[in-house]
Length: 270
Length: 230
Image (cartoon, rainbow over all chains, first blue to last red; front, top):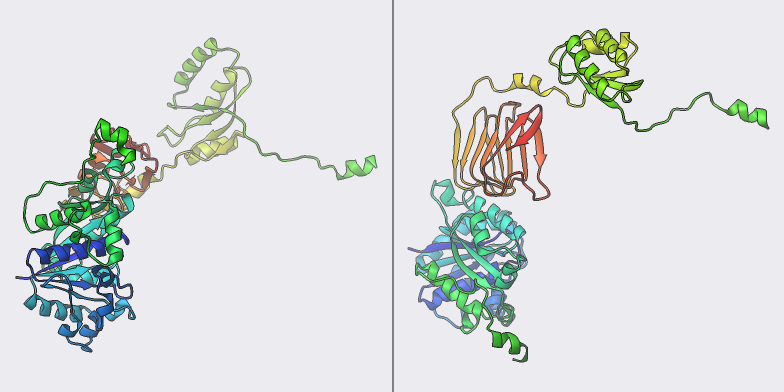
């Protein structure tokens, strides 16, 4: 049974697309047939982060309007088997999407894939609501700062009321992914702690991604950061997906690593 | 030159300014009691009670009228010169006019009690909400109490015509007695609200300073038309 998962946040720039790319990639690494759908019509980014921007011919809207077949629009990942993406249109706007059209596309994808990951646009307008409408599960991405947490709170409220499952009296299983976490700044009270965010949002934490230069480097290269196995962010995404698949994994990168005396004394030289 | 000047000079000039004036807040209409109390005070500080202008305030009195001329006499006998009254009672205001005293509007208006009449004709069963009330959500319990079994997050609003109870943390806005029930209360297990209101009297908490230590339950109710947080 295919699982439709929306990656959403409310606020922009918190790492939805980056997370979507890495989560999808890691699911494919686990052997699941996975498709990523970019719902950010007009501000298409997922193809860049996945490094397949030059292979986009048809997009989601072409499929919903019948101008192209689904198989024509799907782009196969060049690194992993079983990973595909469906890009957004850069030239249209979000009103071009319809509930029926998106529903048909998702139903068709459910036949082929184990996971359908929907990359939501920022905001709470039509694009974001459509991205979450057919979801069975949600990953809410939040940064450790108050505005992001408040917007996430708003989005969780919408997941509980504006989705098809909510309309049918069912719940969307919602989990929290905290990105750009910096334990040192949490220590100095410059940043909200994981515990604070978890308490306010009252949903389980599926992962914490540390603030890391590896993320921006990976995005610019068009390689999802989870491919960068030695990096902290890459490992954190691997852990996140393992937890998402039901494994028990301790949270890493949430505690400040105490520097020893020597590394404190000589840390500057290395 | 000089005569021109005197012609243009006006006879008087109104000046605005703040004067500190002693207010005599009367807590009883009983002149005998007032006289006893005043003469005792006079003995303590005779210098103060010497042609001292005072404002007579009847705001704390429930009575609709008092024997104002007797109160004024008592004051004068004790060295106080009443210059005006402050009250919401119409009868007292009229007596003051007859006695040549000024009138000041009351500091606190007692209009809240009147609003009470327009509240719900009957109470409906309590509305229960389970789970977190999130930013952007608004819950209204019409003619009923509202019980939230969970937290109310920032940017969320919980409103009831009766009482509002939050069994988690109140971080958003809570409005009790939305139709003017002055007996309504807001109760929460932990208080860090943006705003609370009872019967239209509200208070915002913009400084991040809250009345109770952060982990203590708080009760918000009206006392003399003012919000009291315990």
